[in-house]
Structure formats: structure tokens, C-alpha cells
Image 1: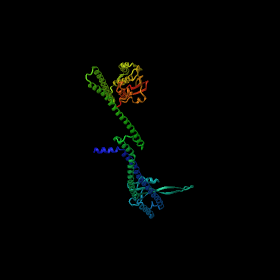
Image 2: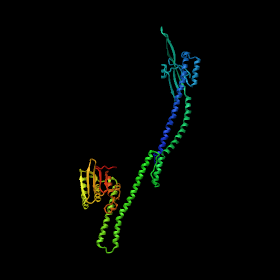
Image 3: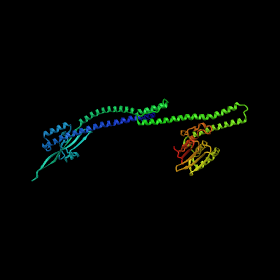
Image 4: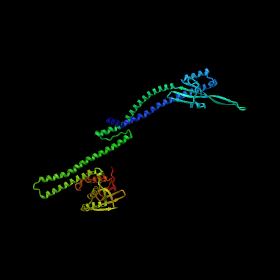
Length: 490
């Protein structure tokens, strides 16, 4: 039972089914309303015509009643014949009521001599025609006043004429023939309605299939890409929406290709970087094993080289682990209030021996005191990497200047140097893992090629930005901008 309900719910979520239902209902509603509108209009029109015809004949008969003084004497065979003829013609009943509200003639012969007091009769006595259709019982009831023209002779003046209501004709007319005609029309309309509904069903089905076809093309194209049968961009320009979906997918596909290429290059670089120290260690070890009576000095030199290569391998592995942690969720940040000015001073004090060794002048400028909610360990890593790179890739007797500033929302750390600079075609690649700008000197300048990747990841975790401006041979300036208050995004 639950499986059936789930399948039914899944079908209703289909765009094709929804389009079909919308088209079918939109076509069905006017069809149903049209049927009832036609029948109602016919009934109203037929009743109106029947009422007008009967009222016209009743007015003529009312004049005859006055002429034959039928209200005073009901024995007139002419009038009785006309009344019976009218009653038979319309399968109805005619009552003649005098001014005393007494029935003087009933074509059914059952109410003569009785008094009738009803709203319709009273209104008719005042000269007003009434008509009422009873659709449930199938008859029309109407009243016609029997009026007599009186002449008042005014002495010395022109005689005045006025009408006096002497009685009422209360008539009930059967509408059986109208009902029979409506039944016939209803059956015929039902047949036409069924045919139209079938046609609407088929048209809705075909249109829903045609309208959904572009989306099925996209689904097929996505399936082929998923199965690996094709990797070309998809194009379904049938609708603006499908074109947008295709463009968005093509952008995702392009991004996936870039990421896949980056992943392959990353794996290749990792393999190369990890393999290089191991190869050096093995060569040194094999050299020692292949020689007998190795001098202590040579043995010590080889062991120092092996230790250096082990340190290099260890640094690569630590940097890789740092990157893995950077790629994790932002919840791994240990946020606390940090004095950025003091932190930069401590970092520069720690790196100053390296700068002195290369005769690099370190300059620190603090525009204003800065307190920020950051992960102290990761921000330390960011600033250390930038200053250390500025020292390593600098010229002899050069300089490195670090500037700390802030506004009401962000703090900035600017690291500028007088170093070798970055070629224009390499600027966009410097954050890639294992990317080295000067590959020919990559062995001379210590590093794994992961420093800027780690730096950028740490900055992004803090919702900050990093920008670089560099000119080859002139120097480089990195500007880090980080919010003063960290807001975690769930």
C-alpha cells in the first residue's frame, strides 16, 4: 500500500503528467460549462416564448370575457369553448376569478365557487401581470387582469375613460414538451461532450509529449555524459529554459574538466615531489652500501644529505595534511580574539634571522591597533608563508615591508618586497598546488610549492580575500583582507 502511494506521488511530480492534467482540465472546463450554458439558455428561451404566446392569447380571451359579460354569467358556450380549447392546447388549467376573489370558472371543474387569496392574484387585481416558472413540477403559472373600460361623463367637459380590473385569469401551462426537448438535447450534448473530451484527452497527451521532449533531450544528453559515452557540450535551444539549463550544465562540465585536469596534475606532482626525496635517499644509501671502508667524512656527508631529504619529505607530507584540513569544513576553525599587530611582530622576529642571512631588510608598519576574531594558528601560517616567500624570492640586499591596517569591517595585511617578481603568465597559477614559478631554481630555493595554496585556503575559510600585484624584476605585493568578526555560514 505504501509502495503504491509512493509511486502515485512520484507520477504526480512528473512535469509531463502535470502538463497533461493542466491542458486536459483547461480544455474540459469550458466544454462542461458550454453544455450547461446551452441547455440553460434553451430552457430560459423556451419558457419565455411559451409565456409570451399564452399571455397574448389570454389578453384576447380577457377582452372576450368582458364583451360577453362572462364574470356575471358563465353560461356562454363560445367563451367556454375558447377556455377548453386553450386548456387543451397547452395541457393546462384556467381559472376565472371575479373581483370578490371567487372562482367563477375552472376548466378542471374542481375549484368553482371557492375563494382564492394569493399574492399573485392580489397583485393582478392591482393591474400587474405575473409569471412564475416551476421547473421541478413542470408548469408555468401566470395571471392576466380582466379589465373593463369605464366612461365617466363630465358635464361640460370631455368624457374620461379609465380601466377597472373586474377579475383575474389564473392560468397554469404545462412545460412537458420543453422538458422532453431538453432531455433530447441533453443526450445529444452528452454524446458531443464525450467526443470532445476524448479529443481533448488525445490533444493534451500529444501536446504534453511534444512540450516535454526538449527536457528529455537534456536528460538523454546528461545520461550519455554520466555514462562516459560523450563529453561534448550539450545544446537544446528549443526553449529559453532548456537553453539556460544546457549552458549551466556546460559550465559545470567545463569546471569538472578543469578540476579533473587539476586533480591529475596534482596527483602527478604529489607523486613526483614525494618520489624525488626517496630517490635521492636511495641513491645515497646505495652509494654507501656499494663502497667498502667508507671514510667517516663521506659517511657523515651522505647521512646529512639523507636527513635533509627526509626533512623535505616530512615537510611535503605536513603541507599535504595541512591542505587536507584546509579543505575540510569551516567548523574546524578555532576562533579567538587575536592582537594582529602583536602576531605580525612575533612572526617577523622569528623570520628575521633568515632575512639577516640574506641581508634582507624587514620593515614593519602598523597604521592602527587591530583586534580580530580569527584562528590564530591558521592566520600565523598565512602571514608566515607570505613573509617567508618574500624573503626567499627576493634579491640580495633587498627589502620586505609588512603593513597592518583596518577599517570598521576588515583588517588588511600587506606584504611587499623588492624581489624577482612574478611573470604575468604565471600570476593566475601561483595558488595551484606544487606550482613553482621558476622551475629551474626550484631545487635551489627550499619549498614544496604548497605554501600559497595553504595560504589561500586559510584565507577563504575566514571569508577573506587575497590579491597580488607583481612586476617581473621589480617586486611583488600581496594584500590579505579578512573580516574583523568571523561569521560561520551553515
